[in-house]
Length: 182
Image (cartoon, rainbow, N blue to C red; front, side, top):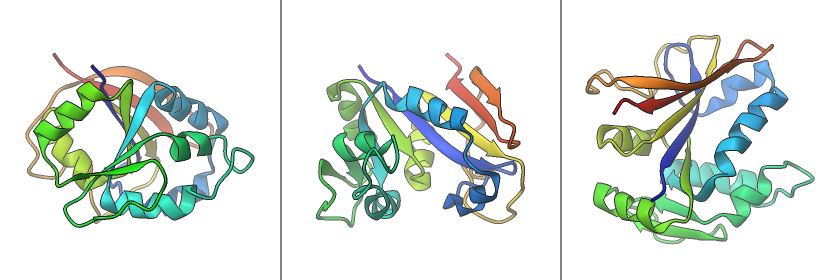
């Protein structure tokens, strides 16, 4: 059985919107290594519709010369959770349909390896609420954003997590990985 590993870029106050605000900090090479360690164990990518529609034009034309992560994003099967998207135009993409925790559990069982999730805030919040996230991989940036979508909404149930890994980078970004407490 696979696991669901979520990767998010997050402000210090928990905002996870489209991370254009991260550009000022640069991308430390060790950040790529941390993401690569998560993706190399993944046999599928699980995305919400909005993130899928943002990723497709950004990744579908990239080559390994452009970005070493491009083979993963282009060659790995992408499972898109959406009640409105009917056609997948990015190769190796499948529409899962509307969010259904039982369908996600079946997908975890069927995929060879883990499922990697990036962005997809609405999907991730649902996965967290249903106890389906096995690891959270967060890159926390040293700034606050104020209003915006948060990883844990105000009405989220309290949860305890255990620290699985951490690292700090010269650009001020912290990488923290958490697992749910048993």
